[in-house]
Image (cartoon, rainbow, N blue to C red):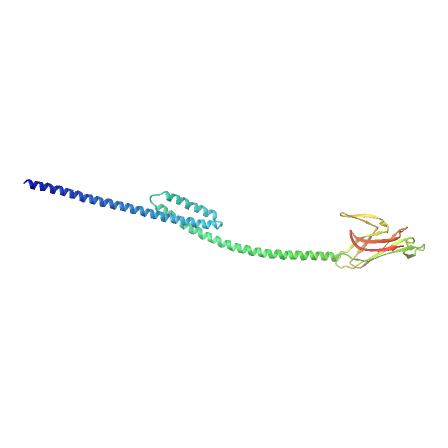
Length: 291
């Protein structure tokens, strides 16, 4: 009887222990499952966070490359790149739900795609404008060279016309004469007999010269370096001209013969110089001697 009670108690203890063991195993299994689930979730969240960060890094790299091209959209692209950088900083600090960041990344990707299309369009326009500008520069360069050639030709033509329009003074001659009481003039080469010097020259015909009244300043210098006649002076700019007399001529593009007398007395022996000036320009000269 005693043995039966002991066996019953032992069986009861074993049954309780068995129940406790089963409960422990169930609890341990449940905890293991929860830990595994948490670990799986943590790994999943970490992987998603890395994926979102990778998308943001790609966005930033795309913006950096576009900004480096320095288009007219650079300022707008910099602003969008800064938004991406700020979101990357927020993502690094986050440990919770990533749905907000995923949504923002998708929005940013869509906006970036639109900006990149617009930027590409601007780049193509810039290429077209650059080509047009280069073509314009080439055309302008050619036009400038052509204009320079024309200017040079016009200058040469103007010089030619100016040179061609100048009047030529030819056949400058001087002779001394003795005046008789009868009025007759006798040529002489003796200084002591000379009463007058006859000076003559020809103005050649020139169809492109300007017609009108012309003044020629005649300068006669004796062997003692004296200017004979009126011995007046006239100034042309910084030049001063001493002259014997002025021959005024009405020129009408035809050949004109000019002759004028220079009266005097006590002419010096020796070599004389005769110069004809058109203003301050010497246009003809000759020499003669009296003995």
